[in-house]
Length: 287
Image (tube, rainbow, N blue to C red; front, top):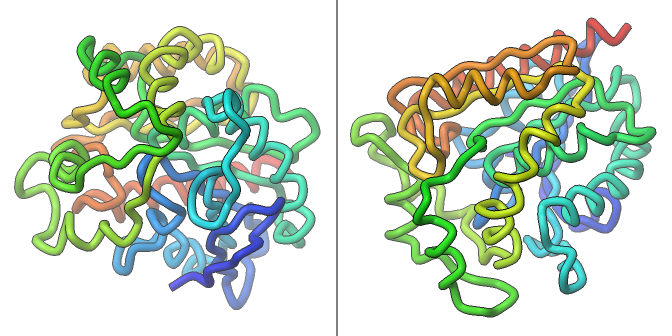
């Protein structure tokens, strides 16, 4: 299990797992969680990206985004995908100074809303030493009725998704996840800033292609065949990849028979090994 840290970097709480020996050509992986989950999303026992990274000599850190864990919330109006990206980009400078020693650069891994945020950071990294970005659980289009559903959420800064509803959305199809799930994932559950839920079904669908078109580092993309939060088919996956026209390398694929939270499904180990392998390749190419 990773160490929980009250001030991981840039005033954000989170988790870190440094390997006993850092691989000779390792990147620093920064994992950005999605909505309604804290950084513990990447550290559920038996499904931990942080543990898997450490076992392969890769340091992995996972911040609690603003408004999650012990991380302070953003000012009103800044809790959007772009606002979160600005806040994390600023904090990542501190994260690189604290945790990047002896690594080749930063590879972002983002899931769901965290994937949209990671892509937004990668589209304009400024002077961050970004060498790759891997996103999952985010697409180009959400089902048409989702915008209305999210807009009917209580008009409070933080909202709670009822656990039974959340489990139904995040896990599918039956048989694609272990009997210990979804219950094992509940340790990572959290209230969610309302603004980001509204933003992902409104502004993101308008901005996604433009954001992806500005990414000029390698991109890894995985989407779940049974994701209930996005419209998913091969045309959508191919369109996501084509939008990243400036990326020197794009590895995009649909993962079959799995739902939104792929990390928690039986396919999760395969997903994480692919993402970490991509991160190592980015580090080698960055020499």
